[in-house]
Image 1 (cartoon, rainbow, N blue to C red):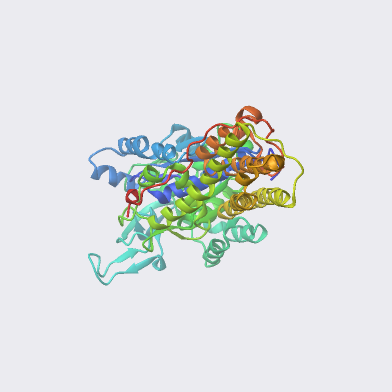
Image 2 (image 1 turned 90 degrees about the horizontal axis):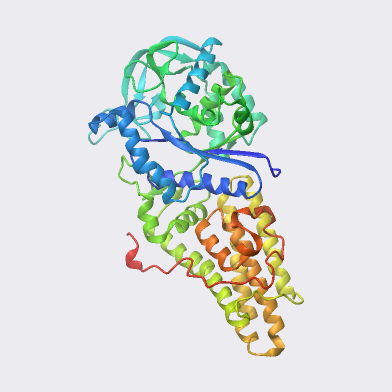
Length: 529
């Protein structure tokens, strides 16, 4: 992207039927890292997240908890979903709730347009309905169980709970009219759906034939009423998908809508079909642009199973952050898993990576360099003399890491970007071991060389602080301050990230400050097993 371009990224909005687990946090952190990267690249960036609060599942959850759906949603948002953003340090620009008046009024405008233009009609529907998914299911989406409480019943493959047979008079969206237009979209814009595995699955699904979509329910009333028939409420997915445009001014603020739209949609692969089939068809019907891209990332697996509250495999983010800290949470999930593929979480892997990569690799590097500048140059970053081949190699590694990371972030390969940036950590650790600054400090004859070595190490840390700031913001801010860069170069987040690899930005004579351990060692007994 060219600097100054619009970069609008949206997470899915999450159901408030329960509290968040690390699967939700994984999506939030990924979107946040991408948004922070683009902000620091000079792009006009907007990060949207929020909550989905309508539908039968929310209604039933509220009734089971002896409260109203609105009271239940309010409680969960205030006590669980908004605190999640603070727990994992999300710098979102907006938070939308489907019970917001701004959302409901804009949804009504959208619906009325589609109805007036003939894309919505009345009809009767009977089918297998999964309350957990809030979706009618085809037979190939179901399994017949042979054992357990649901033996002999058809269950949803995702929730492994029985589906219900519903028959009701509904309103339908003419989604079948858009089958060929969708296939043309996928062909002419091969990067519209990513990664390739998700793209192939979506194309196969659409090629098998699209049916019109039932978009209303009359059997319950927790939802947005249809403007032409208030005995029906809008199907929760049709409602939820519209948040991406209602939040940025659809129907109310045309200038802001034009400024932001289209969005990059970051979703779990299990809901990619809604975002890559139903959603673009809705937009086409309304005469609006389709999203810039739909990226369906993989699942977090625990013990080989998808993270799930209903199966009691959900892990609260605070269980990790309370022990390892927020930055370690963010770093681990963005680096340990190939973004776009499924990834397995284990406490053992988290603890091992924390110790090897964060505490020993990055944290120890920062502490050593700053300690040596304090010890050998009285806290002033020394001026470099003539660069040797080893110094020039560090400069090349820094430059190439910055370039490769930016290219990886453009294609949402967050893990690849971090891997590229980490080559600087490895290079600097090896460089210090070989250059032996503690030996150079013993002789007046090698003080000039010592100054060059420590300037090279400090400038490498300067680049690392900038490049890693979207991933581990708290630790990099501490490092930035300790390097004396804040007073010399300005706020860390004001640094242009794509320029991080340009050598020589840290001014000699910058005053370094003592730095506490960025990633303190953790007693094995503290790790949850």
